[in-house]
Structure formats: C-alpha cells, structure tokens
Image 1 (tube, helix red, strand yellow):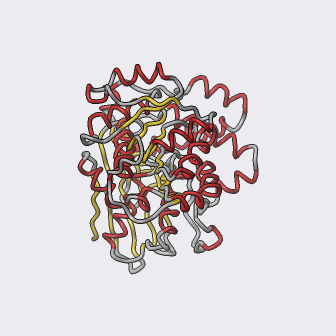
Image 2 (cartoon, one colour; image 1 turned 90 degrees about the vertical axis):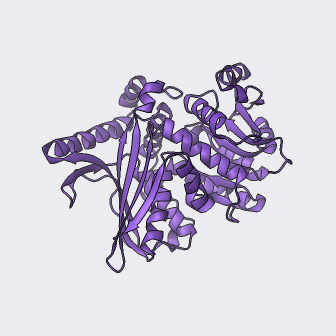
Image 3 (cartoon, one colour; image 1 turned 90 degrees about the horizontal axis):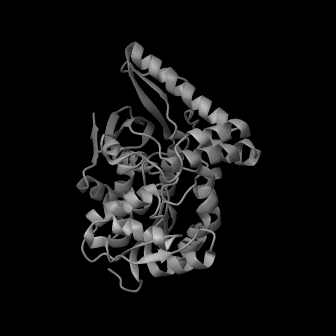
Length: 402
C-alpha cells in the first residue's frame, strides 16, 4: 500500500451512531498495518469513541474536521487515500467533502440515498475527480449495494441482454435517523422546487447523459399493492426511487452492457394470503402518509419530533436480530429467466450497512481495481472485488440461470 498519504482510510463522522459502528467494524475487520484515523468536529467525542473500540484501535489518530470548514476538509482529504463518510443528510453537509476529495485525488465513499445530492455531485465534481484520479463512490450501504451488485450478478448469470428485472426486498430492522432525515429533506426540496421534482422523478436522473438513454418506459417507483405471479403480495419500496437510478447509472456507465432496453423495478415483500394483502396495504398507506406529511411544514415538524433522530439507533441486541434479503428475478431478451439473491444478517440500516461501507472503504484503499475514476457506483468502481469481500464478510451473493 502507498505511504504517500498519512492515512490509508479515514472515517468521517465517527462520533455519529453509524460512524461509530463503522469504526467498530473496521477495528475488527481491517488487516494489520492499515492506517486508519477517526474524524469529526469534536476531538473530545472522538476520544470517547476511540476508547470504546477494541485495543488495536486505541492508537488510531484523531482528525478534527467540520463540513462547514473547507480548509479542514481539504486537509483531511489531502491526508488520506480514502475517506468514508457517514455525515448526512448529504444534501446539507456532503458536497464540500466531495469537492475536497475530488480535488485531492482521494477516493470517497458514502451512504447517501439522495438523488438530488448525487446529481449535483456528478455535475459539479465528476470531471474534477476524473482529472485527479479520485473514485467518488456514492451509496455504499443498504442504499444501494444489494441492488447494484445483485444486478451485476444477474446479468452475468444470464449471459445475454436483460429485458426486465424485478427486485423484491425483505428486511427486518428500522431505518436510521440519518436515513429518515435525508428522506424528509428530499421531500421538502422537491415539494418546493418544480425543477428539483422533475430531476427526482426522471427514471434516468443519474445517467451520465440522460438525453442518450434508451426510450423503454420504466416501471413506477411507487405503485399500489400488487399480487405477484407466485401468489405473494408486494408493496412499494421506500428505497426504490433511489436504488433504481443507481442501477441504471451503472448500466449506462458500462455502455448499457445489461441491455439498452432494460426495465428495472424494486418492490417490498409483504407476505402471502390475506395477511400479505393487508400488510401490503398498510405499508403503502404508511409510506404515503409519511411522504405526504413531509411535504407540508406543520406535519413535517411533527414527524421530525417523533421519528428517530440522526445519530441515534437501536441497541446491539436489536441490531443483531435484523436481516435483509434481496431477491432479483430477470428476464432476458430471448425469454429466459435468471435469479439472484443478496442477503445478510444484522439490521440493514445499521449493522449490515457498517459491513458494506467498511468493506467498500477497505476495497478502495487496498485492492487492485478497474482503471476508472470520477463519480461512480459500487459496481463500476469495485464490482466483483467488492462482492468477494462481502462474501468473506458473511453476506450472500449468488445467481442462477433457469
């Protein structure tokens, strides 16, 4: 590994709930000799986090940096090969760090699920990052690694262009306070800005060249409850409006190698029979109420009071009881069916996400990767190298053609 930078990997936001989980994962999983530092606004809080980590992390350096202080971010980026950030909502706090990393030639990974933030980061800093050699990799957690890597495996198992892919998500666990804050902020932004709403609703809003995208109509992101061909019920999936656009960006960045006519959708599993139908209706209603409420200031203020706060999360036992499973079913242009499964243990928004972001950061810091730079996706930045890391970490990645 290079010794030209002081740190191989810096965790920015280590004093937050997910940042501390990420630091804990790296303390257990990082190979000996990897130079890791913890960064955040408060040195005192960083010292508290470090003291709670395994002994091997007790000499990790601490770096004071603030999203509102460009000079501190420039120094942070210049000291590191990779910065992994959990500081969100990213639309509010993320762009200055993207800029610092893009200019310094520092690889970057985050947990964002915010279309408008990623679009702005692409427009402003993709060319800068390509010039410096930085890999700017968004969405390296439950948003959107299962969707992105699962579709890659699905296509490779198919051995042909894909016509349609449906991903069905099953999970036990809660959304982090940061994820909910990002969702509320996104709804607020699009509610008050017609131009932002058009970007968010565009199926290929994260494409490198939206005008060059093929014309097949994409499935709806938020449809009504639906009974699937196998008899199960599904509901709209809250992450679909973002995950679908990451998958489509991966396809476009690879010259539409999955298929120029690919139609990709995501749904949430609700179960079978009457119970499944009732659950699908309840999920759809709850999502509609939350999104609708977030669009109006009085109800948004109420939601902000009652929903989990950023920087908070469940205890260790609750996190351990969680799991996620993405089942992807694809149809090729010649009519064959292929399936893929991506699964893991631990609350998807916390424990499993710490694994995904941790392995992404280690992958960017240590592994021999494709010669790509700029604003990338997990697939286009790391691909199979990351899949193998996640398999070794205990996650399932498998695909079969029928």
